[in-house]
Image 1 (cartoon, rainbow, N blue to C red):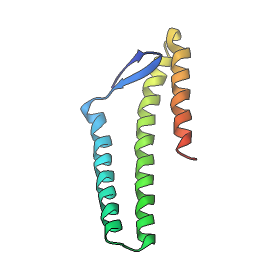
Image 2 (cartoon, one colour):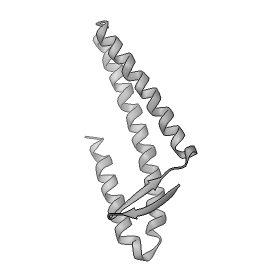
Image 3 (cartoon, rainbow, N blue to C red):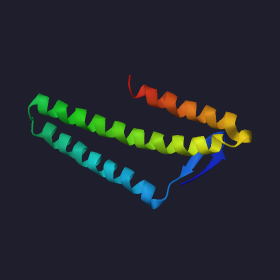
Length: 104
């Protein structure tokens, strides 16, 4: 993975190997959403539908955690350079602030 600073933000360039697990998870989530849509179209039992929503939400949180972990890894590498430390820590803080909104 490569990273660079662009407009006071740390930008990531993932390799195919780093991108692949994220895409696989998103494809699974996409299937879960299609399944939920079918359940609603078929008027399935509400609890089953809500359980599917819960599973989708949990899966999206896992994707967010992977994205955050990748960003943190690169951000900490950038922060090791004294000239970029303040910028990197500010960017990491912004990412974590956004992540905390997922818990609301």
